Image (tube, rainbow, N blue to C red; front, side, top):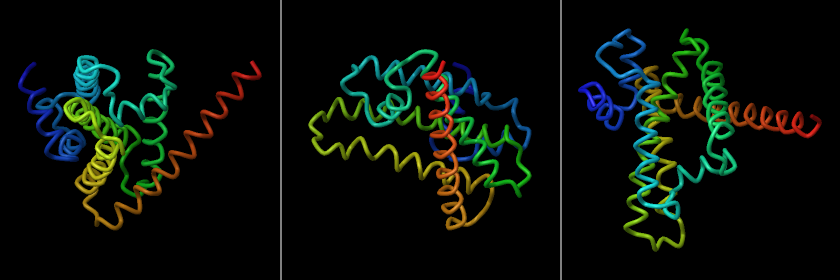
Length: 194
C-alpha cells in the first residue's frame, strides 16, 4: 500500500476521468498503472463480498454472474475481458475523430471498471445492513451511478457537452452490445458444432 495506490483510489472515487487524463498526458510515474489498479480494487471488492457472504452479492456482482454464467475462473475472466475489449473498440469507433488510440480508450474503460469494483463492496455492505429490500431498488442504484461516472469521465477526457457525451454513450453501448452478443453467439455456435 504505497502513496500512489491510496491517492489513486481517492482520485478514482472522487474525480471521474482524472486518472485517465493524467495517463494520456504521460504523467504515469506518479499514478498507479490502470491494470494494477483494477487488480487491487477487484481483490478488495471480492474480499469484502466474500466476508459478507454470497447472499448479499448486489447488482454489480449479479451482473458479473450473468455475464459469466456464475462461472468464476477462466471462462468468466474471458467474458469480462471480451466485454471490455469490444466496448473499448466501440468507444474507439464512436470517438474516432478525437485521434485517441484503442489503448487509450481501453485505459478509460479500465478506470471506469475500477470505479465499478469500488462500488460493489459498498453495495454489498449496505445490502447486508439493510437486507429487507423486496423491490431490489437499493441494488439498482449502483448501475446508474456507474453510468453517470462513465459520462463524467468521458466529458473530462474529451471536453464536450453533456448532450453530445450522452448521445455517444448510447451509441457506444448499442455497438458494444451488438458486438458482444454476436461474438458470444458465434462462440456458442462453434462450441455446438465442435
